[in-house]
Image 1 (cartoon, rainbow, N blue to C red):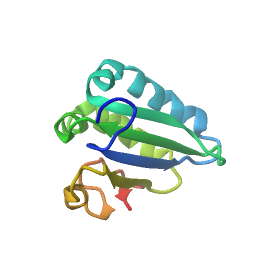
Image 2 (image 1 turned 180 degrees about the horizontal axis):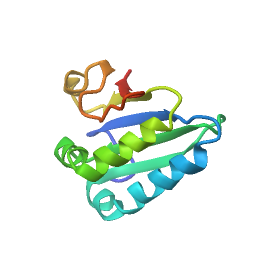
Image 3 (image 1 turned 90 degrees about the vertical axis):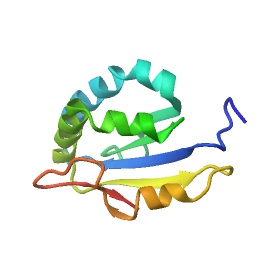
Image 4 (image 1 turned 180 degrees about the vertical axis):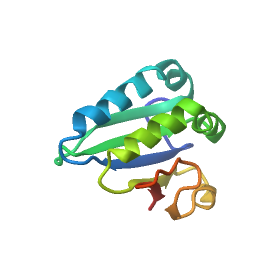
Length: 132
């Protein structure tokens, strides 16, 4: 099914625990990252949401892409690696990602992205990304 109901794709919910007082610096990096990728997202994403919940220091990214190949291509770019590293350095702990597979998808995504420290995201001397 296409449109606003997504059952044939995976969803990533990422949480960035931003250090107190670093929200402005974090957004100064993050906003251009997604703003410069709008054409890519319009072509390759089912939907994206970026925002905050009750805690003003935890930014949430909810993303669903049409295929993993497009996401993997973006992750391999120098710009992605550099900017995500800078964002991680502004976090008080690991960026965590929770995965969900669509109703019409198999559980393969959980094998691709095993629980624990991510091997597809950059790490810094002080931080990393982790799949829950």
